Length: 170
Image 1 (tube, helix red, strand yellow):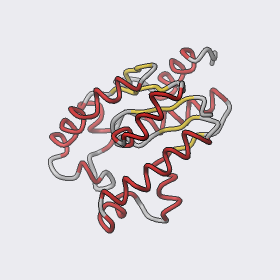
Image 2 (cartoon, one colour):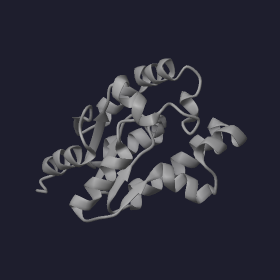
Image 3 (cartoon, rainbow, N blue to C red):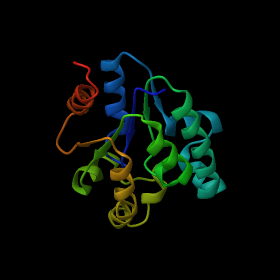
Image 4 (cartoon, rainbow, N blue to C red):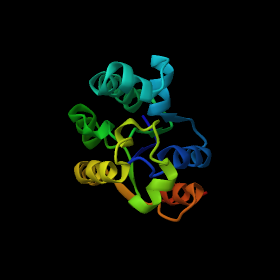
């Protein structure tokens, strides 16, 4: 069972906060985006381009559900993984600590660079990010057992706040 699950939009800091949180909790981190790339042998942007979003979402669902069931450390989920009903249901019923990392668009933009490695943000990235958040924010909020704003904060400081909420001093 994971010690913590991190959810949130692109640029919230799930990967970097996750690495810091794993150090504090003295455990592994499983970043599902990296695991998708490892298992498929392709970058996520290439999966979107070559195979399409439905194929990516199918792979993502398998990787995420496997991670949620079997990982023993920190799990950082891809931003869109919570859109899958099975993933959302699993999280809602799991009793796992789920931290929603909130970020404003002004902070997310420089973090993600709105580049080609983020396939859903390539055309009019600010508008796309805002549209993604209109759909995803209520889902993130409903699944979270903890919400943490990451704006103008270092990953270690966010990780310490999450660890404290988990009852672990850093």
